Amino acid sequence: MRKLWRLLSAACLAAALLCLMIGTTALAEPKAYDYLLPEADTRNYTEDEIANLPPQVVTYAKNEIYARHGRKFVSPELTAWFGVQPWYSGTVEAEAFDPNVLNSYETANIAALEKAEQNLGVDSYTLDRAGWDTQVVDDYLSAQISGGAASGSSIADGMEFINIFSTDYFSFDIPDIWMEVEFMTLPDTDSITFCCQPAWDAPGSEDGCVCTIVREHEDVGADYFPSATYLGEKDGNYFYLLYPTDLRYDPSDEYVADRYNAMLEAAAEIPGTFVLK
Image (cartoon, rainbow, N blue to C red):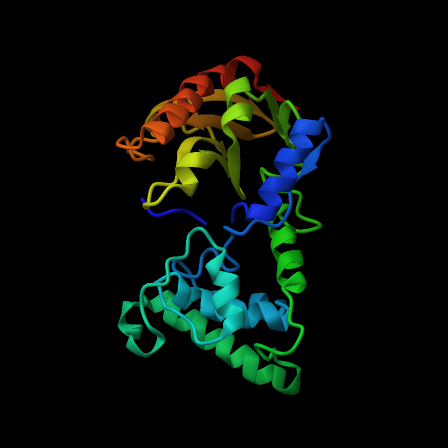
């Protein structure tokens, strides 16, 4: 399975781990593995949704659709941005990119984003300007992690960890071996995936997924998910712990295999300390 989407950049991960070591709280920060438009390949974004995007996000989001298919970029700014995304693998030269690989949703969303750029006119975003930075995009991603300022709906709302992993919805004791091996998180609206950092960093497509906590808005039953453990329900939110059903590390790499399997074994401790708030 290809390495997944809204992560940790090296700087964010280092800061989080430092906070863990010195006993302070590490709050969720914008993650490098987030998609700006995560559903760009499964639905058409509305005109209103796109109109509410900052101009820089519009431009990045349009190119993100191409990037998800491995397209390389001439723009140094886009090359730098997508180059730190763990889900990105630039394998197709810009001039060789075949637009036929795009599905109907992606094609329609690109057209809608291009229209938005045209409507912005002089206010549209220009790539590669002197002194460019990604603060606007980082701020946008941060809002998406928390489900937006007003929604309060994301499972990652209030995410923080010291020795306890905590969100607004639940908490659990972090297994000691996770702290030693180094874990990383992939938060999404209704799930948080925990990965083995050495497996994520190793060459290859394996993402090191150890387990995922999933929130459902109805009782689907543990049998609905392969390798699932039911964690509990509160206020119409049902939580399950899922384990991967396919190989997420390179078994020929003994260093990675030992650390991944130690984390996977320790994940069985989560249900015993899992508490709904």
